[in-house]
Amino acid sequence: MCNLKYIFILFLSLIISGNSFSQTPDQFTTSELRNDLLNQNSESLTEHSINKKLDNHPDKKSPYLGALFSGIIPGTGEIYAKSFIKGAIFLALEAGLWIAYGTYESDGNSQTAAYQSYANENWSMNKYANWLVAQNFSGSAAITDPNTSNLELLRRQVNVVEAQNFSHQLPEIGSQQYYELIGKYQNFVVGWADADPNLSTNPGSANYYGTYQTQMYEDYSYSRQEANNYYDKANTSLTLVIVNHLLSAADAAWSVSMFNKDLKIKTSVHMENKYSLTGQRKMIPVANVNVTF
Image (cartoon, rainbow, N blue to C red; front, side):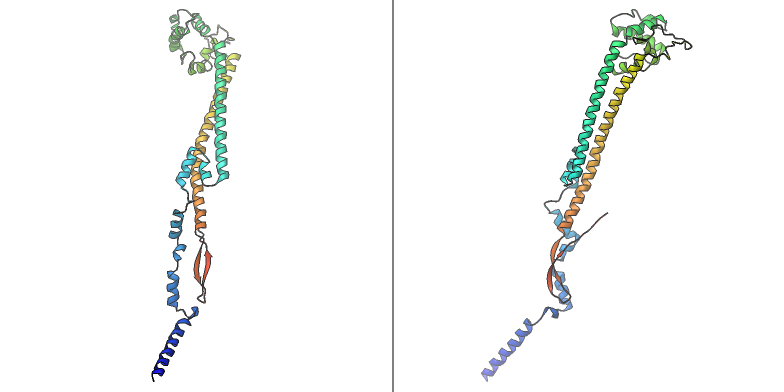
């Protein structure tokens, strides 16, 4: 009787063990399968998880830092974002614009020195003062000696006459305005070496000073304008330098953002546990692609 009891217990144990080991994946209930799927690492598929991974990614870059780099030296922000071709273009533009600025500025300085030297050799304040006295302009009595070598004293005396008769007075000798006015206003034309010293104040005269021109006066005006053109081109180059900095900074911020988006796509590729329709678990690669316009 005792043997039958032990045999019965052993048989019952085998049945229970058989039931527990014979269950196949196909015998998972819907509830069990759902719970298992929910418990797997599905978090890696979410945007939050990808962003969290990206935040900790060693290759992630800062758009603000990229913009700062390019704001200081155009192209460096693009290089920081590994956009090497665009970085090279912005750097080349920066170098070219600075070379253009330096070249035009130098040409302007050379041209300025040339026209100033030409004026010093060919325009005479003494000749101008003598004409003011000879034509008996109002206030000409202030000019005590039109042939004096003290040109600064003579200039102040000439200013007294000019204040009563003309729109402009002769500035300090050698100043930028001095060289501008003697090649711009008609009352100064008589001071040129090739001008008639007896220019008339009568508007109806053939040699009226208000319409009189000389070759030296025209050559000087052209030379001075050419210097101004060089300076205008230099200023344009400098303006474009500033524009290049701003454009490169904006592009660098965008390039870094695109770099991070590409990094995000790479980060979101991972392996996951997936169940087939029959309930079999498999490891498959999963990639999230999110394109934003």
